[in-house]
Length: 271
Image: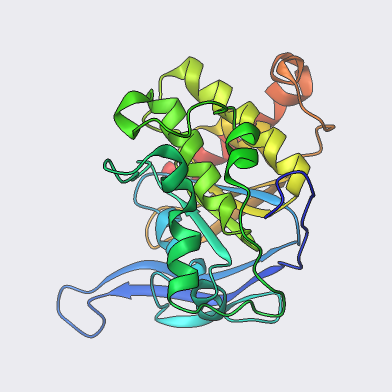
């Protein structure tokens, strides 16, 4: 991927009637999700929030084709998630950066794209381009760190490297499961601004799981509030704050009002 040229493939995510039951048919069956219907527009940034155990990460795993739904289906554009996963068009970030300690930062960034090529992953309608690793490192603020090993980076820098690795796939969608949860508050805020800057350049379709209501409101076009298990969609909030968002956005009355609105909804589902 050329890190200087925005790529904007169609990536509308349609979730229709999705349910997930662990141990289906057994005496200890647990229903994690029930009747999830959600439409995410191409290029949108959508956050999932809700109480612990409500199925946010489960829904993300279904969209990523890391977990098969018990009921319902997911499509991304006109394709099944499995097709995009095999083609390396789904980028995923987790709470931990999961960098290979024996590889340099540059090699870690290129790793997933190399694996897709080795396995002969298809391009789902467009040819793969070789990722420009130095440009990606520059994009995420890691210029000059390509030759370092992960243990030589701070936690925030390791997550920057994980973000560059996900972007190296030139993904159609970027799925993020609490990627900043383990960071201190200052680093977490800095990473939120970095993510916002990258998203504004590439406009990937992003689904972002977080427990921070402020983070969700600041980053998102829409915030999806889920109820306690079995997870259902309680309410969807449209976040009409102007972009680009800045530190002043976090101090505005409109931002604080929206955080309060989502917070009141969270109290409702926790009662």
